[in-house]
Length: 124
Image 1: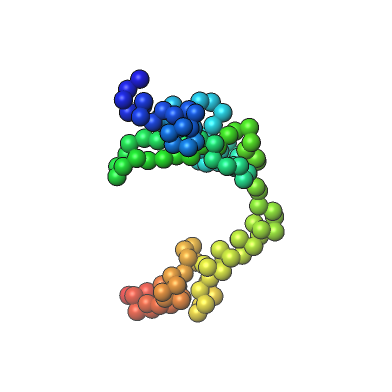
Image 2: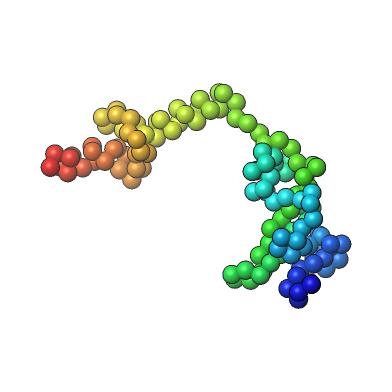
């Protein structure tokens, strides 16, 4: 085992407080939040079960691990929530001045679509 791996290997948690493994050294049954999300799961309120430590830019980096057997299915938006999100996104794309629905979000700094904010450039 290399010195770097040995420095971050603490499966009992005596040195770091929770079980600690090196990069790509975690045993099966653990996953990061991103890995859970890719599998359609979420931590579901469980505490951090272990961590991975590795040397990175700016110092030691950490990735927290959660147990797969305690993970729950990811929540799915209801049809009403999806409809509300669709209406909100359409409102962000609708110009207040001309009422046109644009293919981009209206800049808040202008308060209207680019064509209404700069009519002299559209005419040219």
